[in-house]
Length: 452
Image 1: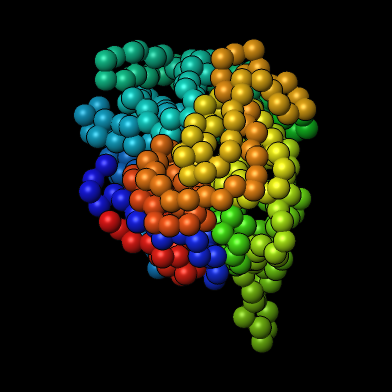
Image 2: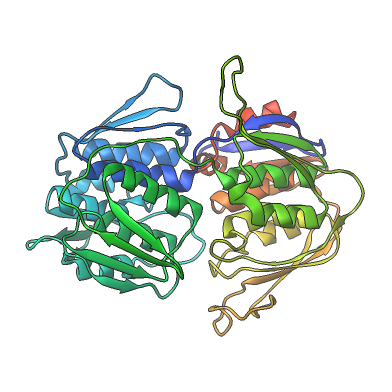
């Protein structure tokens, strides 16, 4: 953390205005990795200027992929014609910056016959072990050698299709299987797979490249390996996490924010809860250009309609449940709702630590080890505080805040904007990992915030 990594926020002003979200962070980086598998250039549109994209771009360039900006703002061209090995020292420069390197394994094993995984970073919201990634790669035929600097993988006999079942529908593990199976010899069957919209969009990318992937009912995905893949041209789904974060900011500050690019279909679960709390929204569907008409970008306007917000009970879950990345921003708004709200976190076991900072600002939030939702979860018999009870409404006051992780960081920022007085938020550069130009967007919405 540097001296300049501090944002001074003068709270108490409702946010009003219009901002735009681009392609989903949780798809963009995986689509960039998928370009490694092709034997022709790929073109990706609506790429946000965020730290995670910079990290993946750096890793791809280390491995010989030529990454260049296209003619359109937010367009990337990825040319994998000269894929090459990178040294462990070069790759380790990025260690701790992202968890993406684990997903390079399958593509690099296909292209080069070997891969290296450095120590992995990412947000500290639970261990998110890579055990299944390694186990799956071994089932495909990879050999894994552990070393002090990371893990070296080889595939002396190539990679072959296999049958796998996830103990939990993990997004990362599903991505690993998809990126490895598409060029593995034979058929791969993955059971209990994640089916998040970003996963389906990644499947669309791979299918454009020439992959054969069937999504069956009951979370079963079947991949028929093919000998070669080409490039792709793809415009990703919009970032539903960022859209919901700005929606929560509108609700918490009593504001009115129009989010250009946001789409209803992947936010239905969030929109139901947003309305139940007392928020209002209006959806404008995208209209394609026609003769004599320029068309219209899709958008959702979110606002606080006045009156009291209402307490709710919700559980996070894998898609189509309430997304874990939605709960942290929304909890700030729930501190302003009358009554007792209950949040049962079932995806990550250590995702409620950010509530301590909210309590220091005047919120009343208690966390529990029990499953307070309607359904017992896998953390219920373990020593994790994964349920929260939020009593409101609470008047928030300014405080000095230290950002612990990406989504909690945006929640702290929302709290500072909603609180009376001037807060200092430390570690704001972490927000750049997933929120493009967030300071410029704050300014566009009338927020009073500046670098310390």
